[in-house]
Length: 103
Length: 155
Image 1 (spheres, rainbow over the protein chains, first blue to last red):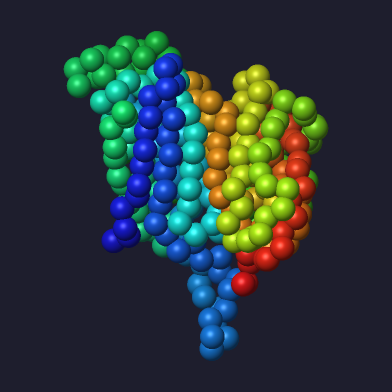
Image 2 (spheres, rainbow over the protein chains, first blue to last red):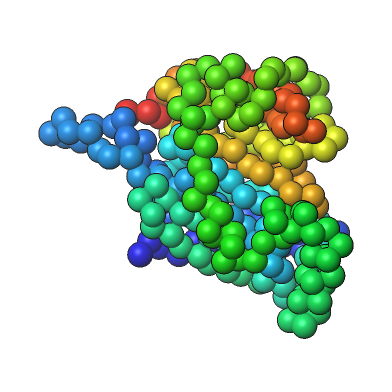
C-alpha cells in the first residue's frame, strides 16, 4: 500500500481551497535503469475529489506529472468540519483513498 | 449526515440527468474512474490531442491564464497552473508541446468548482506549455514558453 496523501482543505469564505500531495513514483515508462532495461510505466491515472457525496474535481493524468504529485484547486461551498475525500488509481490498478476535514 | 443526504436526494430529483454524471456517490465515482483517454494521452501534436478529446478545432483565447516559471531549473518538477475565465468551462487540460506525449493532465470541472488548477509536471526540454480549455463543447487554448535548463524525461 502506498504512503498516505497529505491533504489540506482550507475554508476561504465562500469557497474551499484543497491542496493534495500524493506519494507516488510516477514512472514514465521511457526511463532505463542502470542495466539498460526499461523501467515499466507506473503512474497515477485518475484522481477524484469528493465533498459531501459530490465530485468536486476529477482528473486524468499522464506520466508527465511529476513524482509525488501535487494538486491544488478550489470549489464553491464547504464549511469547517466537512469531509473532503481524495482517491487516486494508478495504471497498475493500485488505489488509495484519504480524507481530511475542512478547517 | 441527514442534512447531506436530504440535500443529495433533492438535488437528484431536480436534476436527474445531471445526477448520472455529476453527483455520484464515492463508490460510483470509483467505478467511473477507470475511464482514461488513452488516445489523448498518446497524441503527439495538438490537433490529434484535440481530436482525441472530442473537439474539431481550437481557438486562441485571452481568458486563459497559465502560471509557471519563465525558466525552470529542474524539468522534472515544473509548477504549472491553468486558470480559465471562459464561460461554461467544463474541462482544463495541460499540454507540453515538446514532450514525447503532449497531454500531461486533464481536469474535469463540475459546476461550482473554480476553473483554476495547479500541479507540477515534467518537461523534457524547453517548450511551450499549452492550456487547453473545453467550454460549451468548444476548445480554447493559450500557451506560455518555459525554458528548461535540466531535462525531466529519461534523466
